[in-house]
Length: 397
Image (cartoon, rainbow, N blue to C red; front, side, top):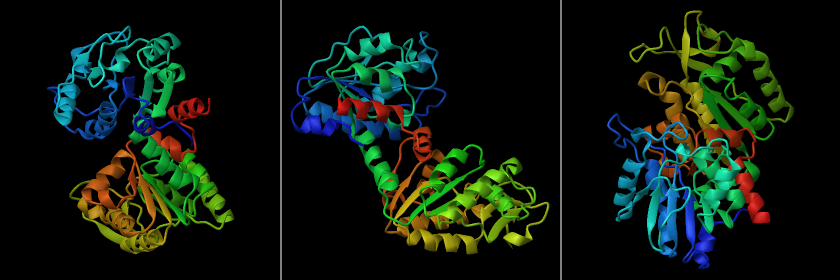
């Protein structure tokens, strides 16, 4: 995908003295007192801001935070805690500017944070009048917020239509590169791990990947539905019996291409879903009617690990068991370690996946960790994200 890259504009001197509007993703979790409890997104936004400042630009940064009501600003919607943390990370004061749509004063070499963009009327519905006003604030618009790239809003799409130059920041550009490497031009075999509680939430992803991947590894409640489709008893495990036909269609689509959906040969069961529930390893053919399947078994995990170590590209979305409980965590741990040890290019995304990566300390062994949840899933579905689409259009104009 061809987009203008902000790094290229800075390197060529085209950002010097220019008004740069950066749409970042600073939607951080907060405690009841408003303090930031996890600042990964703020830290991830810093390189783009530093790049703009080093280039001699006048820098404006904005983001959404939470779910404010448009036109009704409340104290809990404020980016004030983010401005404070951003200032600490940049080693300079970052003034917070409210009511900024009609004009912002910022000089080259300075940075300001524009208050929660979702408070502006028309932001969510990408109102053209709002988009044009925002575009007049800048000479260069930079989208560095992959987490919102699947939404066509005022600060993610509309402003990019009308700004003199619209480009991708380093975070967004890295996502585009990683996604292209993993899905558009993958080194084969291409293995995808899609896990989660429900087939229904990821059915379109499974169907899309079934057209492209060499191995489609399913886990969690999704695997239970596929086990039903394979004629296995799953006891009282979480599954969607009404989607067995869809699961069978995915299996057949893969088989027709000489590819496969590996069905677990052994599983880890319990009589209850609880942190202290005793775990029992069973053959997949021996699950009792009162059993709950909460993880793949060691034999299945070992087989999948061997496949992953032989892969050329790995896409990972979702843990394969209830990894939060240690007795049902082995499958996810073995998968994570196999990805870490594989020479394949790997890309991972989704909140639970990132939690598993952190739990097993393999951050440095994963080729690329995506910063977007919903956006990452829509990419896996084969959709073109609105933010990517408008930046590609502007690059081609």
